[in-house]
Length: 225
Image (cartoon, rainbow, N blue to C red; front, side):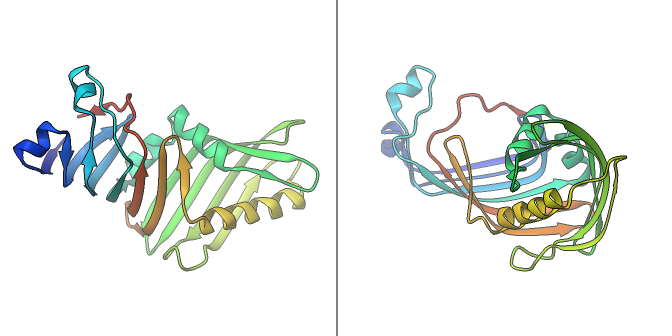
């Protein structure tokens, strides 16, 4: 961890009662579940925790909290994150879609992202296409441009390498799934709702502005330097 600043807006009486009017957090080089974040800024609204639970070594929210976040992830850290099983499993869950005849899932086996600038993302590597009946390896390279969440994703180039080819039905369903994911107002994970307000693809990094609603603080968040 390169740098960490924490500011808790409260007074002594409120602190004893487990209340804070807000918390601001800034860090650089922070690791969350083995994912390194180059920069992170978090600002919460008021927080109430159960002070008795704290004495027992537990942190429990008395009500959900809203968090405004700004996160920068570098190309190197993004590619390291894509090697983690839990990240691959999340992508597998989000990239499961229906065709007219089956349910298809995509599992990223060996994927690399390059961020050359000008809002471009180059995705290259191998995925597993699982139709339930068979698992088909697929090598691919895609050049896409994502200027903002308000504008469509532009596909500048796409190549795939598989001896048997891909059914048109699957490609149409996949494009439709990606379009729907981009249009989602929020994403839901355990005890957490995430809304991405702004996404900017920069040279060598991605900038995310998001709003998070947290029902409870997870009891297994490892923060590493």
